Length: 330
Image (cartoon, rainbow, N blue to C red; front, side):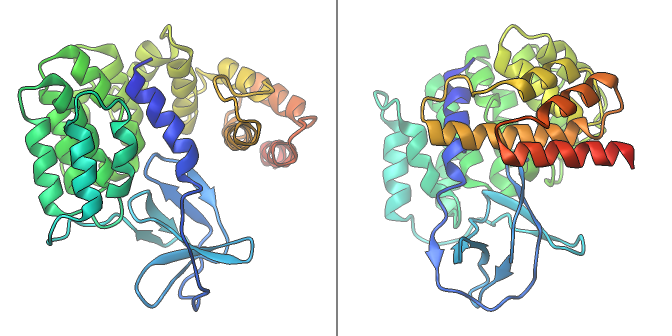
């Protein structure tokens, strides 16, 4: 599994806890779902917009800011969608951006990705242009870092540019590692003008892992995506890719990965996560989603896995399994 993808997975586990607390604000519009840039859907309470136009949510009696870009979409209780993808802004480079860029171009800095977290929210065009120069340059490592940096800006323009830069990379290793960042911004890329052409090109790449990254990110219904998810994901040697493929296939209504989803629903811990509290949160989040997916797939093994999950030690998982079975029986 590429180091870039491992680091993205680890950082995604902490992004959900990085919102800043603010004072309570008047309610402007209620919502029940946040759609994160990486495709996660999170049920929420009392989502509102404050007087500065920032989206906030209730959390344990407090108001916390929803970081635009990390969340791509707010869906209110009436099903109305509110896009929260930021635009590039004109203005001087911020100190945080300067520090991030310095970290990015330092060859010996292996933790450069961490520095890029500061780029979401109000990304500047100046930073975008510098990242483009890196992504389109001749240095393989800086091509990788520039492309990943563009995805971290979380704008339509930067994400689309990143996708094009990745597909243009000649070095297979750099292209493979860079492409592993695309699923983290899939909900943004799907809303970009020109996305269908990007997905079509990505699905035809010579490298299987690149094809898989673009298939996983693609719009549902994209021609050839299911076949790539099965051939390059579900049949991959890397168990992370197999699990991602099984989950994405189920999201698209395909039951090819149900045996693997049943195994994931039955496990007691998350591989590679040592922190007990973090492991429990991630396991709960994953298994709650799996319950919902299995509830939509009409195969005997899906029902059997849900019935077994009724005895889970995790209360949210038990409730999710019960709801999924009720959905099947409705």
